[in-house]
Image (cartoon, rainbow, N blue to C red; front, side):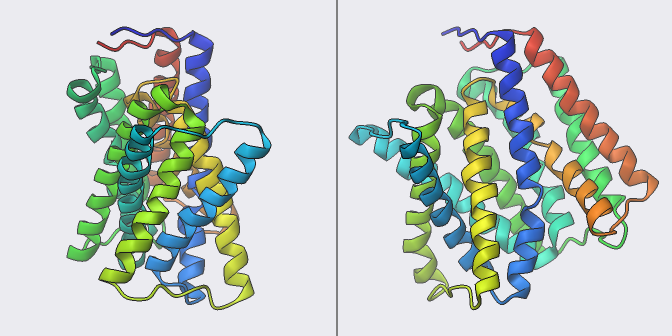
Length: 305
């Protein structure tokens, strides 16, 4: 099957993925503050998607978006998407807690390479040499920017490595899922049911595997968690899944790799955590990769076979 998207629509898709990545860039800061306030990673992993799903449902109902799906759609979106998003939530929080934000980001952004590598056989979206080169450039830029950060060196240990790699694999999985589901069910249904499904899956399995999930112990922790959920789940997830309805999975995944560059800039100018010259080189490579994928995405029609 071959589908074509207008160039302007494809550019909007790239910009949506970049906007989602800018919101996700604050995730590490939110998570670390919640951990310091006594909220464990498993609680963040569960409560964040539940609150985000609630915001999504309320906002989309007010906006008049249709959310009803048939039984097959509920199974695909709620269970399939829920497992992919839920595993990612757990892996990301535990990796951040185990080895910190820089190492987690370095491992997480192996995902664009995974997506570009498997989107051909799974989705029929075979990357051209330019797309492969842009993915490699972006991943290299992420790793260089992490290595070039001051006072936050990446430190790899067995638990952190395992959680970080799982985060990368599950992020790639839900990117591929979004590209499959969004053109069929729409961005609103896809993001609502996959996010709510993640909360349901985690609500069942986390207490069984870890024990009771602790609620935030203070009003400050609740406020941070609510804002965290609103920005990085409700807003960012909607933008990213809508992007996947407009552009290929590989394009969206590379564009979303702007996240670590934005996070490094936020840390530099807001938290006084500067970058060494090598870090700025890494950011330049990420920006070049993201801009390159935007230009090529706009120039080329979307094709599926």
